[in-house]
Length: 174
Image (cartoon, rainbow, N blue to C red):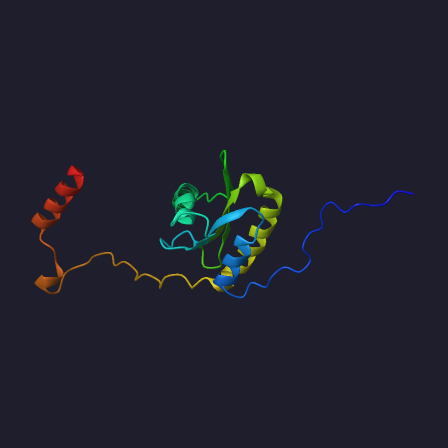
């Protein structure tokens, strides 16, 4: 009779995700992870972390392109559910999900290709993303409803047309 060999066994006790810090730690524990970025697409300052071996700002720098693509999708009404960018040394995996208030949360990890298992990373990012709606701060306060006709009641509330024209000219010159 032969003996059975276990090649791989999934971790059966997943770490609890009770805070954004926990979510970031879980992302950085994904095999091969060297950087992670979490947040919502409307927030210009996401939570990020990286291993000490990476240069300062590595996690955010590696997140720049996938975030720009996902944010453009949000503006155009088609947020990608998953983005994967594969390079010679690193792979970047990002997953997004809609929050109850209409914003989109995302979880992204940068992996060293040599040590990464993208399938495991997908599973763990999906688990992290599932917890983010309860961890992210609520969306911005609702904006005031626009009034059809706005009339300044005081001269200080209006802006001279000449000033607006100069601002527009300078913006066009950029």
